[in-house]
Image (cartoon, rainbow, N blue to C red; front, top):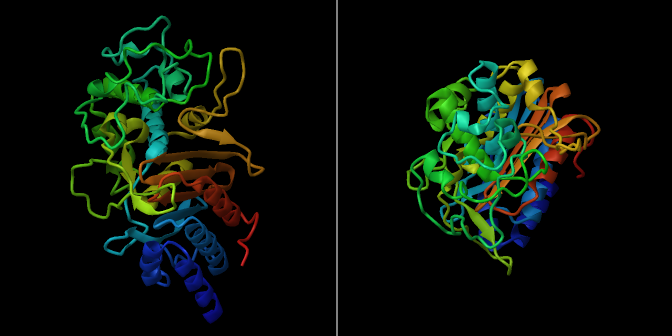
Length: 384
């Protein structure tokens, strides 16, 4: 154990000095509410901790929070490093991170609930529920939007027509957010081309509001967050004082860690504007696996891979990616934006899931999530 601790300290000191100072203070103190859960063996927990620690040090990440679901229940969560480099605040399993695009699966669950209740027709033109969106040359459906087949553009390469980088511009409603892209031409006829679009999920948010007769945030809170016991999940309000919210970091071209740019994500809440913790996202995954939020038959619809109109599979279902990358069906989604990198991966047949949330952008946390999932499923152990 002494040798292991010495090795860890050496790796910390060889990383960026500011990160090293913060992590060194927190290295040997568990910061997860479920860190000692006996349902996860100490050996498995040790392998997971080593995998996360190696990723943290190798990428000079200030803070990472992770969680694991086994047999349909959260069994372990922990924070590594720091949530705030300036004050050395520890990252814990309850630290709040920007979710980025793993907001999309949450939105998909909410929409499928309405479909399950007969309140929303996935194949009706979106104007049935969102009259603020202008009609295009071809009808667009909610099913197409959820599967990124609606022809709605994503962010522009040149940034024109988008919210500028480092912008604190606030959007008060879903209708206001639509104005960023509503008048733009479609990138392809609906159904013909997979085109990943966060703006498409803003339109989904407008559809949800019309079908539910509630504001997006209110509906999701009442029908997803509360039943899943996601006690801290909420929109990422840039101007609010939010307890336990992490700071956001970016590594520049020289390798120096700096504060990430300003981001008010009010224009894209359904597709990338929520914040949550590793603990809460583990509860979300467990609720999905246990049929607590939608029926298993509805979940099957949500997890069915979509096809373009010429029959080609897209690899994406309704709000979730679907593959067999690990030799079994994996349902997952990643996210990234200023100051955050996130990943949620489920292995439904094994009733397992992992959550990875980091407070630095442009990180391949999907690779860490896959390594963790393999460890949880007994496919591999972390090298010593």
